[in-house]
Length: 399
Image (cartoon, one colour):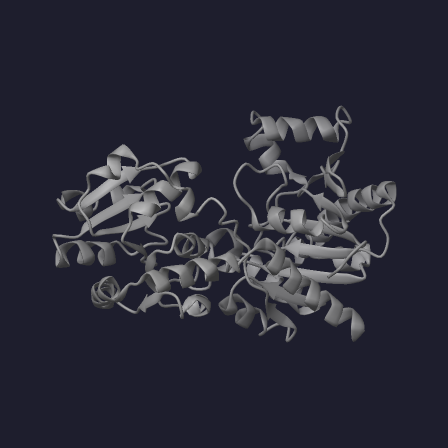
């Protein structure tokens, strides 16, 4: 356990983002025993122009002009900083020499605002935790001189077009100079170890309190009369992440199985053959609070990932949600899924999906359901942060 320390967090997602965020959950857990300053990324010139009508951007502009305070207290020991600076938009700049010059300038402006805030709050001997902000925070280790500098990787971002121009080069250098790297999947920890031998898998937190079969009392109307067995998926239906052909194969192999898909569709899904199959049901996007009730009706939950550089290393939080409801879970076999191997069925192709669904339906027991539930409950934010604390303690004891 780390207690009574000053922790500064930088990352890709601002603290006032509306969607869920690993970094926000980790920050909240840090703040239970430490003082935490969550630093939003500085506003860049391109975003300030393109998104000028968005309330969040208007707020940031007012803060930069001094019309609103730059530090907001969110809770005891927890503050949010909105930097009073505007940086250049350079992420797609191809000239390395020019990029490095401008990026150092951006970093200096950013660091200056952080120094003002930690001075105002009386922060000392800081631990700096960086949630994959590879470019804007590249020089912060040198500029802020923290006691400990941690780089956190939770996605293989450099596989995405936005990050390919400079990210591939910069993230490797960034990981190399970090005191150590922590990752939320075994795959990402292995990738990071190419650049820093002190790269560790620290697990993934997941709040599964809502996914409790004992607390689900209602059956949604649009799934109530769908015939079992129900083979279901919950989440965004995106072809960049899911293999449509696996779902089609499952549906065609057993027309007595009901394939239920809960979530918004991209154009490829909307135009796919799935909409022509009588045993496939698209139930659309649902509020998060409704998802446990839908999942409770599944006989088997699936995660038919397409394998690419973006998905292969991701920790699939939905698996924890599936298991927390005690559900039979079939997923595409990846290195990141190895931590779930004891409680899930892992398929390497569309044929194996069908075989494993058949097998799982035959051998399911109440004991197996309970084991899945108990396993999912281990993946808490508290346990995730404890692993990070252990690495901090280990680093400080040896340096």
